[in-house]
Amino acid sequence: MRETKYWTWHMAAGVLILVLLGLHMLIMHLGGITNLFSPHAGESVSRENSIYRDGLIFFTVTYILLLAVALYHGLYGLRAILFELTLKPAVEKFISIVLVIVGFGLFALGSWAAVAAHTAARG
Amino acid sequence: MEIRFHVTRFNPAYDAKPFIQTYPVPVSAGMTVLDGLHYIKDNLDSSLAWRYSCRMGVCGSCGMLINGRPALACNTQILHVAQSDLTVGPLPNFDIIRDLVPDLRPMFEKHRSLKPFIVRADEEELNDPAGEFFQTPEELEAYLQFTYCIKCGCCMAACPTLATDARYLGPMPLAAAQRYNEDTRDGGRLLRNQAAGGSHGAFRCHYAGECSRVCPKGVDPAKAIQHLKRRLVLDYLRLARKQKPCRKVHGPGQGRPLAGIPAPPPRTV
Image 1 (cartoon, rainbow over the protein chains, first blue to last red):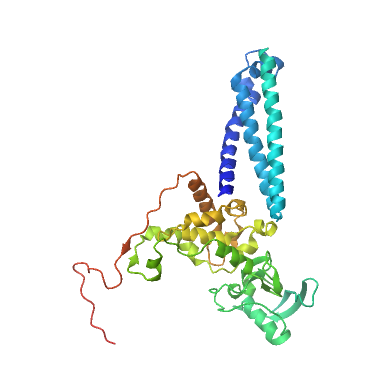
Image 2 (image 1 turned 45 degrees about the horizontal axis):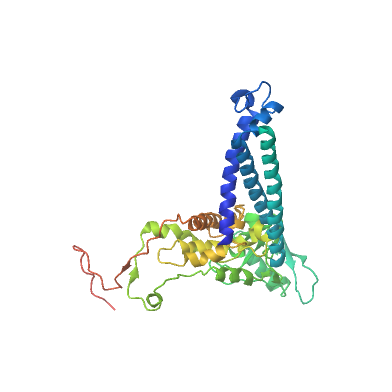
């Protein structure tokens, strides 16, 4: 049943990615129409608008959440692909451990970047 | 009319790898691939080996790769699939015992691991039934098509996931698990979930759908696997509706006859 747990969260992460990427599309790529979270003149990707969004706790939390679900969804998908190569159980275990370490490492790095950007934008 | 049969030959005792041997076979309308193989065996090459039994699409023994598609040799007519040349090989995704005989043991081991039988807490009722179990037509319909599986292995041979992942349980065993999970007489779903929800279980299915396309009995294993996945997730989230255990009714001859139904005529024998 452990795989059922992983799969269920994989699906849930996929749905969450859709929502968060939808938000990203609305803010970043349809900014000319929606004008969401872009109070300064110019494009939504301009420096001023980016700094403004980095300063909002909502965005910092959203960045970290998107990073977490994207990493989980992507790394679980990679694990599923690798497991289809008829590997030995020891190799499968090794791959799982490596992917968990890589996942947590990238999550820590990305979270640190989001928090640092938030702190710099506030300061 | 003459059709050239290009048959895969392999005897592990002598051959390093499989090779193709061609036989000219005179074909008339209505002849099946199995008939063609019999012609070769009787007239051209008595060493050719394949597996068959019923010759009417019931036993599932003669599954083989006919013109690149897994099918039963006994219900594939030659002129429906070939005009001049016909390739016949063993089912892929299985080891070859000899010529057209695949080693189906891994499939049946996986099948057994999923407990393809009615599991009940009241085992004495199974061994010594005191009555009958009542199922509505709708409850029967939920699993009926999956009971038509004849374990020929065509779905396993067509499965692209099984082609790379030999430990994947495969369409036939997973469809069998779903067949028993849906049966209201059964109480073994959580036991089956252990294997079906494993790292080489139902979640490895990519829903290519080839298993359903090639099934000679019209079973839809791909659908069974999707239902199985859904049930596994709902079981994990504890959102699955509790399956009502089917009612046990009286045994044969113990019931009360309905009013207005005339008595049967006296026995003549």
